[in-house]
Structures are given as C-alpha cells and as structure tokens.
Amino acid sequence: MKRIWKVIHIYPSDSNETKKVLSHMYNEVSKELFGVGTTLLKVSVDKNVITFQAKHRRASRSAALEGEVPSLKQEVDFHLSLLFKKKLRQNLEEHTDWEVEAVLRDYDSATQLAFTNIILK
Image 1 (cartoon, one colour):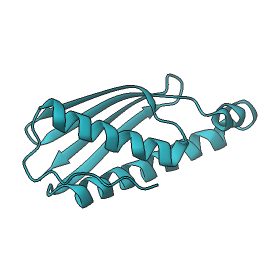
Image 2 (cartoon, one colour; image 1 turned 90 degrees about the vertical axis):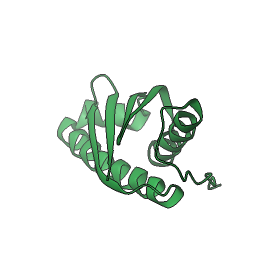
Image 3 (spheres, one colour; image 1 turned 45 degrees about the vertical axis):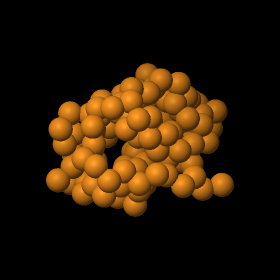
Image 4 (cartoon, one colour; image 1 turned 180 degrees about the horizontal axis):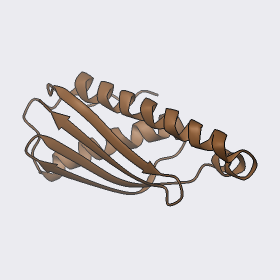
C-alpha cells in the first residue's frame, strides 16, 4: 500500500511536524528497499539543509552475503545507497514544493549507520 503524504508547501522548518513527516518518508523508502525501517532516526533542519542520522537494521540476506562474498555485498550496498537517494529525492519532490539540489549519503555497513543530507535550492 503506497502511503499518500501531505504536501508541505512551506520552506522546511525545524518543527516537530516537519521532522515527523520527513521521518516517515525516510522510513517508507527504507522499508521499500530493505524490507525494514530504522532502529534510530534523527532529523534536523537548518535553513536549506535537511540531515537524517539513521541506524538501520541488518537484513539477513545482507549478513549472508557478507560472510560468503564480501566484495559483492559492498557493491550491492553501494547500488542500494544510490537507489535510496534517488527514491528519497523523488518522494521529496513529489510531496513537497521544495527543489532538491543534491542528496548526499554515507553508509557504513559495519555499524549500519547512515547520514543523509538533502540540500535544497
């Protein structure tokens, strides 16, 4: 079931409502791609930069790949991160009136931590 998000028509603020909507959006993308949401998610907004600090759950298939073919797991993580950025950007642009300039993401598979920065125009 695809969730319909309320369109945010204002410049992003550091309000709890904005953070809640952004958290749900981030977790929906995570669930769609990885089958699970995050165990920890913190959202901050500072002018035109939105930052997500997340700890993801380790998928069982990811652990299996890591044990058998570590180089393949790294490649899969890289491509999933690219896809995650693409889908998050699409959701933001579809459900807000914000123009996204860049989506920057760093993911550490050893700790399952990810930092995602959204830069708005």
